[in-house]
Amino acid sequence: MTPRLEILSKNEIYDIHLATLQVLERTGVKVDDPKALHMLRDAGATVDSKTSVVKIPEHLLKDGIRKAPNHFTLFGRNTSYKLRFQRGQTYFSSQGTSAFVVDFETGRRRKAALKDSKSFFKLSDALENIHHASMAVWPSDVPEDVAYAYALLEGFRNTAKTLDGYNYGEGISIDNIEMASVIAGGREELRKNPRLLGFVNPVSPLEHSKEMTEGLRIFAEYKQPTLIAPEAQAGSTAPVTLAGLLVQQNAEVLSGILISQLAQPGAPVLYGTVSCITDMKTGNIALGAIETGLINIATAQIAEYYALPTRGTGGVTNSKSSDIQAGFEKGLTLSMAAMAGINFIYDAAGSLEASRTASLEQMVIDNDLCGMVIRALRGIEVDEETMGTEVINQVGPGGHYLSQKHTRDFFRSEHYLPRILSREPWEIWQKTGSKELRSIAHEKAKKILDEHIVEPLDKSLESELESLIKEIYRRQTSS
Image 1 (cartoon, rainbow, N blue to C red):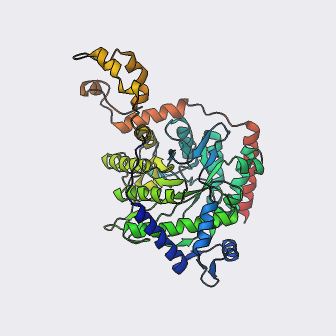
Image 2: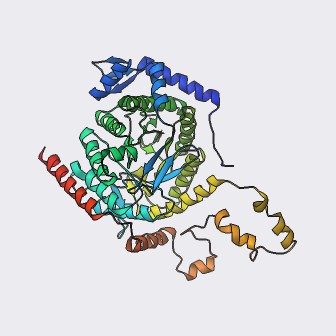
Image 3: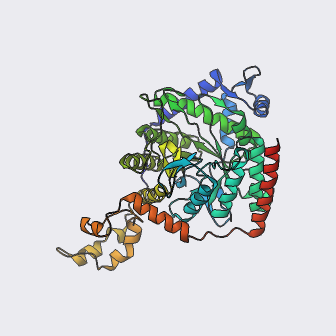
């Protein structure tokens, strides 16, 4: 039996649903994209042309939710690698779009560069518990207007796993579609077998920005799955109460889903959250707070009410280093999100400083954390073989199980075997150098970067992508 955390009763979920309907019908949401406003007006929403505020009736919202699929598949560079987003399935992603990295040689924080994109993609490709290779860093050493294209090319070059798309604005989204179409073998093939995971973050409270909404429409048109995930902060951009945050978040997500379904009925979407609390002492985002875990649990339940796949946030911390604070914040947020049934957990590996900073060593450490959580999700299988009555009777009082066939048959599947965690006695730990976990992770990351061989990208496709990037560069830098 798979463990499942729940925090809301059925009545409480329904109350949140009713409150959301009231917010959308009475207060509405601001939509800054004229094309989306036009679609919403034509569909029957009330649109104030002066304020761009849209009030959405219940029947229209329900129709949009009904059209959104309850499962879909995202493919890697080759269709042999795929993630099936559906109930009962949980995937972990590396963290995304950090402006800073912990330098692999000096250990100091610096701005991210394109070479870091390559390293993070390659590490994601090698780490077995990281299922999706996010655009981990935002490179600062290439022109800002084309950084997304350079980063996506590094993704296609350095991993065969599934990738993020960057859908911030109509033109940029189309560029992403063009690049992914090269990999897929054309736009129609891309529609059939999507290669990009889009990201939309509504502007809390209750606003859909022009650029994000444009990207949502374009990705929906091409059937590229898009997660809609507010980063509402309780006490600043959302009500300080978690229930109030959930109502506002629900209104933001569901109105975004409606836009996607008006753009393309059946477009795959994920009901998402990056929401957390505001630290009322400092005013900073408290992504590693225990409330992040609670919000993820509630989000999973609310998404289940609408029969939608989910995106959550776990493995996050406000710590600036791989210390004890990072350990317990990451462990709690990741395990709570996973055990709530979240289908896709973003930022699960490599994140520090509320995801502003990325660390290769932390990614290696988090790979073990993800492995432990994956094992927890499998629960305990109880059947005639696993109960082991025969071997218990055979060993009897005072014996041991080390040499038993039952042990050899089951220990690899029953026990998670960590890659870098220390379990040896103190004396052996001392003899092998008394290494701290970050040091061990550094060595592991270096070995992967030096030795791991990524399934090569076809040279003709790589050449075509490079030519496309040159066109994007000329267009963006001349405008």
